[in-house]
Length: 336
Image (cartoon, rainbow, N blue to C red; front, side, top):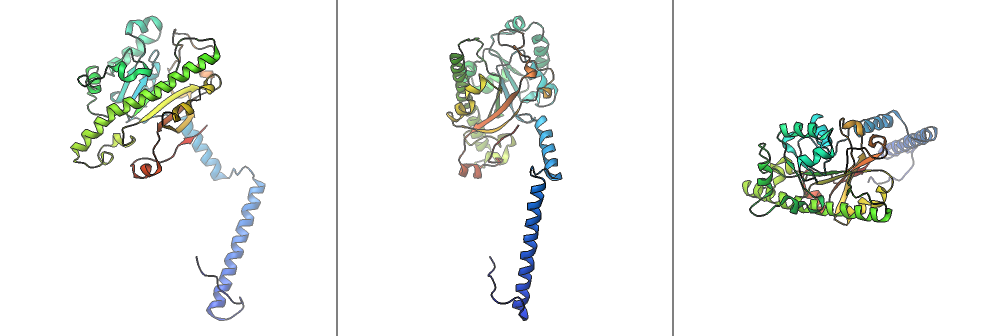
């Protein structure tokens, strides 16, 4: 900070000139401050042209919000009639070679009976693209459901299901749309409690699966790069933590009983932090039909008339770790 000069403004010489210059700068700052104050009084909402433009851009980006990137890997959990999976591939939101689809149901025949008018077309479309589809996968028991073992590794399982050759790619995103246990419990308190248990187990098991798959990927990459940081050599791993954790994405309807699930609290109890949340824009997913878990019927009120949100959670990383981690923006946002 410059030292404050002492003396009179009217004095001659360099000191006087500097004092006069400082006085002019001070007056100019006072005028500018006064103008800004008057501007805020006239326009209290602060909707200047620049602010309006930023708001419009934010709204446009919001409407196009997709919770994962095209070149990232993604596993969908609890798919119903596979219409969401088909939609994101058709819209070009994800490359088919980077997608894995899982279903809680036991077989193709069971899903044909459950969704006779929609499932088969979606399924054939996805199979023709050689996308791995795995049945009997319980989000509350992911590792156990996949039957992963030392001799039956994740990569062997996935590569058997597709000729895309998943290779040694990391798993970056796990997405579970509109969790529901399919029981139709009328007791509200019990219904909330059981769905809390489902979501908590989903978070817990997703972290286990990330760690199991991606730790091997990162260790192999470090051996290949002779100890150099994997993030400098593999762009697909930039968004993973050093322990191999990726993003866990959840969508839920707004309002009760979903608000009472307290998914942010359940996430925190699993060491997760909210990276971002955004409105679920149904128009972004043409062809996607949200169905009941036990039939092809829509919910009581058509899903597209209900407000819903995406939530993106990531493993909490300390500030020091964030600074040392490449590709991390270090902060999350919660937008409309």
